[in-house]
Structure formats: C-alpha cells, structure tokens
Image 1 (spheres, helix red, strand yellow):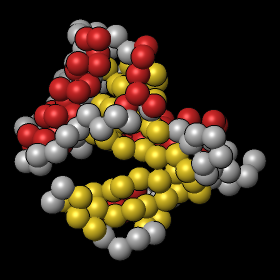
Image 2: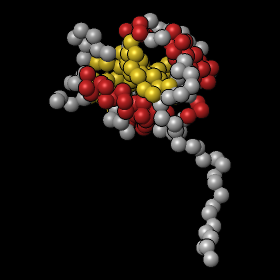
Image 3: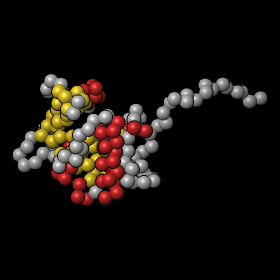
Length: 174
C-alpha cells in the first residue's frame, strides 16, 4: 500500500521566482532604437506616472552614461524589465554616479533590483577602483542601499517633491 502524505495548498499570493534576464551594458550611441524607446518608456512609467512626479527625464546625461539593461531571454527585447544608468568619472573626477535605477512593477520583490545593483557595483569595482560611487537615493530606500555598502553623506532633501538622500560608496584600493 502506498503511503499518502498531505501537502499544504499552494499560497496564491506567493510570487514565482524571477525568470533570469539577459543583462547587457550599452553605450547610448550603440543602443538599438527599439531598446532605447523601451528604456525611456519604462523610466517614464515608473518615475513620472507611477510616482506622479512631473519632471524632465531626458536630462542630457544619457549620452555620457553607460546603461545596464535586463531584458527577458525570450520575447521582446524592446521591453526591458530592469535598468540603471551609470555616469562614469570623467577626466580627473573622483566620482561616478548611479541613477534611474528601476525594475518593472510586475517583477518587484523578486530580487531583480538587488541583482541589478550588484552587477553595477561589480562593474564599477572592476573599472573604477579607488573611485567614489554616489547615488541620490529615494529616502525610503536608504536601508537597502546601505546593505550594499552605501553611506548617507548629507541631510535629506526634496527632489521633485520626493525625499532623497545623497549616499556614497568608496571602493577600496586594489
């Protein structure tokens, strides 16, 4: 006789593990137009519409930045699910900066944002040793950034009506 074991019913509110994404760094001038459009659409969706914050997202810094984009491995590559912009240090600058870090609303809470930031930090450690990395963090995310080694360096301030904090991460010498 076969022994039967009872199992708990599946939790309908549990999120499925995230699907792996294809990650790639892009220079602005090398990004395919469909992907660039998808990135700008997602940035507007999150930062303008979702956060009800009217501001000019295209700030003339994208052209100088590197863009880390996560797209589904299958399907439409013009529908990015994760994104951030890195402004590298130029000339004798001692700072690089991260910004526009986001994940698509449908995949939040699945660790994709942490993977996105970890990939960016790895890139910066490899390419900008002994530099400081700064970020203008939304205040409610300070603890999350602190878990990656960022430290608050200034008092909170309002940026487009949202509380922000300047945070930095100093990479040690090799």
